Image 1 (cartoon, rainbow, N blue to C red):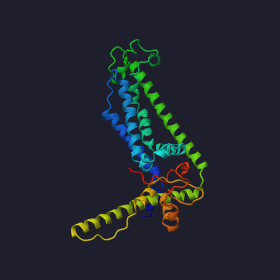
Image 2: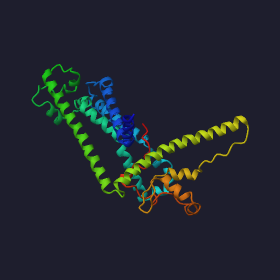
Image 3: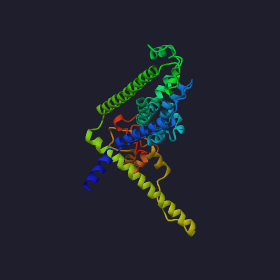
Image 4: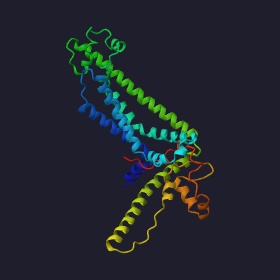
Length: 326
């Protein structure tokens, strides 16, 4: 039992990392299935197009899925078209761009995993490259091979080259496989280094200390979990109240539900401010707008810290993310 509690505690602390790992693992497994079951190189003039479609289109679909599954995406875009006057302001537009970049850094996990595993596998790359009709490249591949190598290069992935020795075909495919794997490892290494640099820069410019940042992460996750639970419970009570009133034909019991303005304010993106000590937009709303005196002062203003023209420090990108939608 103690072992189970320890494992559960580790999972809760590393939820984001485990989520990214699970996404990468599922993506790698899906690529293996596609490569072995679905992918069949046509060995014709379609080699390049066919190989590149299998290499890049699933990655693009996974990128779009990453955007769709991000809570932060919908916090950013919901109602954005109604704020046209603000969109024309350069600072506001740049702040939205920074937020979108932060969303992208999370959404690219699955696409990069797909491309990396596909390059390590080599099947898509071999098919695509053998369909490239560029003299310089074909000369590189067929250097020292039979004269018919360039003419039948597109047939190599299927082993249907009739005028080229099998050894030459195997050598070309081995070269392509090695080049594909080198590109795959270079992509993995570059992404890891880039991620390390981004993390170091974000931590270096962190406006809060290490321990407070740990506390902030725990708070954000717990608030997201409890908000989901409270929302479900309140919606169930309201639905039950309405159905009971309808079927029994009696006046409904009073149930307090936040007004539209309250929902709008807590649905906006959080903005960090050194003047305040709020850990989320909900925290700030509760502290400020529930006080009648504060509510009168802020009736016509947003709850956001520092206004809408500033972006959060990179180290605080987790505040609006909530739970991963896996």
